[in-house]
Structures are given as C-alpha cells and as structure tokens.
Length: 134
Image (cartoon, rainbow, N blue to C red):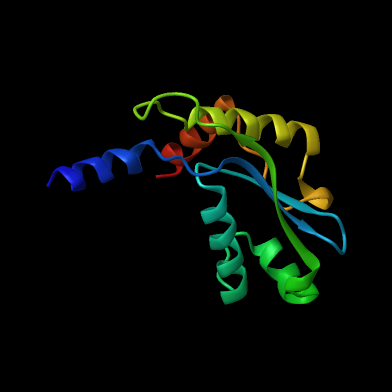
C-alpha cells in the first residue's frame, strides 16, 4: 500500500512538456497555434484527428487532405518548465504564452488556421443578441 501511495505522489510531481505548439503547412506557411499542459499528447491527438478526418478545424483538415500529411510540421514553439510544487495551477502560464504567440504570428485568415478570439465586450454583445432572439 505504501508503494502505491509513493507512486501516486511521484506521478503527481512528474510534469509533462507544456507550452505553445504550432501545426505548420510546408506548402503555404499557414499555422495553427495552440497551447497544452501536455505538448506530446496534444500533438499526437491533433495528428490522429487529422489522419482520421475528424479535426475540429475545418480549414486545417481540408488542407491536410489536399496537401497530404508529409506537408505539415508539428512543432513546439515555447515550453514552460514546471518549477512550482505539485499543487500549482499551471493553466494560466501557457495561456499567457499562447496570447503572446498569437499576437506575434497573427495566424488568422490567409496567414493561418486560428480564429480570432472574441474580446470581453464582443462576447457580451453576442450574449445580449442571443437573449433578444430567444
């Protein structure tokens, strides 16, 4: 029983690679920027979804089908080291880095596959419109 407790504690203190990643088209240079607490896992998940034809990003999925898997690169742009204790919430840290990379690369429209995130005011206007139409 002690061994199980020790293993569980060790697992909680083991951190996976976390940070910002990109999926880049080698044909047209477009990128999809994302963030994850597990970079290896999210990159594998994205590749699997693209290969199965079920990726949530329709533009990326269409170009994957058109150009082929060999024309895409899966890359870590920025990684964070786990320097805090096991109870530290790392979610805001990579999210901050993601905002920085989105601002730097602006992967929207012809430059990439990301959709611009709505600002607070735009979200509130959308909520108000939805309530008025119901």
